Length: 73
Image (cartoon, rainbow, N blue to C red; front, side, top):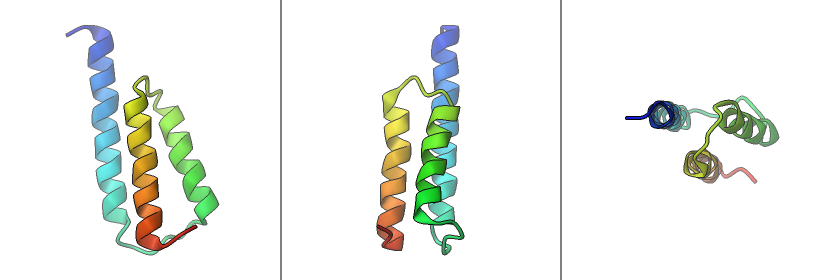
């Protein structure tokens, strides 16, 4: 596997782990406002340097699911 593919695989693995943990945390009431939560999701997707738009989209999909579960607008 090329170094680039190895790196992308690592980033994707981290993204999957983060999403799994966020889903677990979604069982608890939020301590942050909706605006801050969205900003954190966007920051995480940029910080991780996702080259795959799919990984970034998965994070934002997780945010949308979380908002739905919490009935946030």
